[in-house]
Length: 490
Image (cartoon, rainbow, N blue to C red):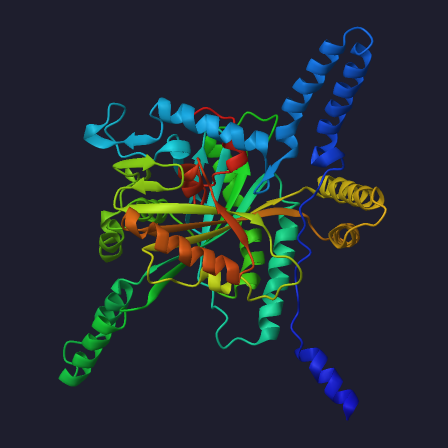
């Protein structure tokens, strides 16, 4: 009897996940391999100049220390050099008035309401895929990236057995591992956007299914439901965006690359269906424009929901005006703040970890949580896990008594190498959270809400200082790969 009880308990025990780790390069004082080599060169040059001139050797050592010190200092996961570079770039952008954007009749550049910043040159092509109909592909010419977005209708976790949830997580893990073998795939992102429900879909459904000769009492009950049900409820929109790059060594037009990207959808569509447990539909150009238009102008979302014919095309989906601040982003009728992940949750986690982070918050006009995945190819993954294992062993061996974090990091690196050898994929990931409110006075309240939700998810986040506009655009279904735009003039 006791054996049966133990077996049932083991079957009911929830699965745990984790083993996320941030690779650390071996080197002195956290400088990494390149910084360590530079430090040794400074010491060698200073020692060689010491017999010739003590003053010259001292000056060389001081200059080397001043140059290398910002590389050793860490601020929220970034080096001091990166922090200083971000500050200088922000000051230069403000001096050139690049933080202000005006479109339409008041603009000196264009009369169209085109998208700002990194999306200014983006285009949309619609490609025929046969069974799926027309599929919209967003093209970002400056980075040669092509993005197709799928709209999902997940069933959620309410009244779903834990075994079913574990199976869906397993399907998602297999799908992410398969992305590493997808040719020319650069990035995959999953976005969960929550907004107050305007009730338009319920009203349209009731209107379409009601009969004029129905009993008056039934019509009155339906009318009360339509008026009262949307109060306090929220609309949840889940999207999956896949970003590709153009094949190297081939001269292909944008249309040809879009057709090739659309041709790969059926296989990815089938793999993703098992992970979400619901229907998946490729988004059209009009649907993409509606999402982007509502994100930049929250007041327009209700009109777009009531009358889809008001949706502009992609060239007119941008805001009338925006102003980027150091820690916020003003756009038409909303003010947004975007946070990015600094550190993943430590230790083991459960499948419901991010549930509260993605749940609707009625105090916010819009909340967008975007999980970005950038898979390594199998060859790069094998080299990476082996290098991480060597670096972890070096960090643990160079101390007489390794710390608990060093030993934990070594165990995680060994486990990652073993799992990769058995066929698992290696993926870089981060999380972006964007909260939109009506005015600047509500930003502090939004900040408290987001930090509380991130704390419940055991996630360490920080505002994207100096790049709020780019962070806002990265959460939209346009395929913005932030590292690719760090050095691209636009």
